[in-house]
Length: 448
Image (cartoon, rainbow, N blue to C red; front, side, top):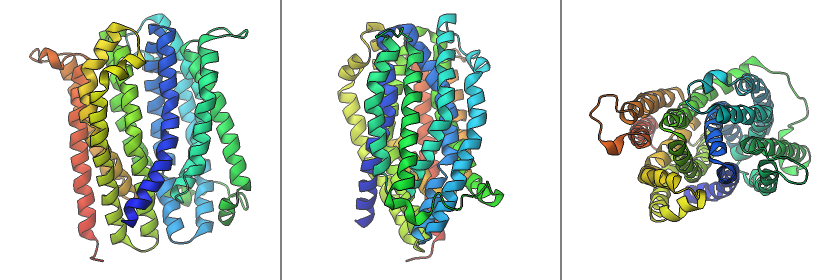
């Protein structure tokens, strides 16, 4: 029971923060949708591109969580401080290629089939987010440190404060007022950059002054990048980042392909995709808490107990996500009506609701198992499973179904629904593969 309580307690704090963060996307979607269908379509494409870049890089930086957790469990505070410093260097380096992709998105936009006006708004949106990327990655270092030592509440407070500030700033920049013109979708990005800068400033001040961090000596004896430490971070972080990248591109690139079915189909997809992202925060929060708990127990020299803690987290995430899927299905009409007043957009979104209601259990299982595996320093094999499942079945299968390549696909599985059906099958496969990997970990451990 101790593992259940520990994971649930930390997951609760992390969930509040994650919901606040994903609330940025909800606010953007709601306001862009009310600005114009073109702004909502631009947001859909721009958000898909940004998420592919940001989440992939975030996965690398989040190698801090299991490494910090391990050093915390082994009672080595100085090692916690050193790995945090190296994580900051890594985040700074990773931001450079990410910014270049966001500042020059032409090749990626060429894959879409959107109107020139939508394409220009997407470019403006991504340009502003390019300036915010290094701020977001550095804040992830602050998050990873706190989550690794099982003190996520200080992160949550900053994330909730950021959302409270994001709402009025978004309204001002999107719709204009007080002498400011209406920017539409690009205004969402401007508001995000301002909030990220303030969050990072406050987080840095807390690291310097809060007594919780004093044992780690975060700012004393600051060291230059060291290859041995960077290699340790990259050995775990690169496969994890690749897994994140594959997972999010398999999902986000659906928007790129669905754009070929028209603005209405793309807008309806964006509504459901945004809701799926919100629902994902529940299992993700449990996964982060589970990974930290597993890493701490391994660092303390209790590998068998760490393995059992991982199973507790996986079961907790799967059980709660089943309930969440049922709630989403029962409230689907009210939820879609809240997102968009356009009847055509709402009709498309409702057709896709069954998929996100069903795949919650698979999504919850795979992400929690992945975090538990990374805490056992197993990251490469899961990354390969993501590539085979989510790209091989999710994207390729969605293309075959959605565009009726063979000529014999039922109408119910064509268009956007084909991509969602293939994505569901891919998630089921990757969840099964990761579960088998984790069971194999348990067989290699000696009985307690």
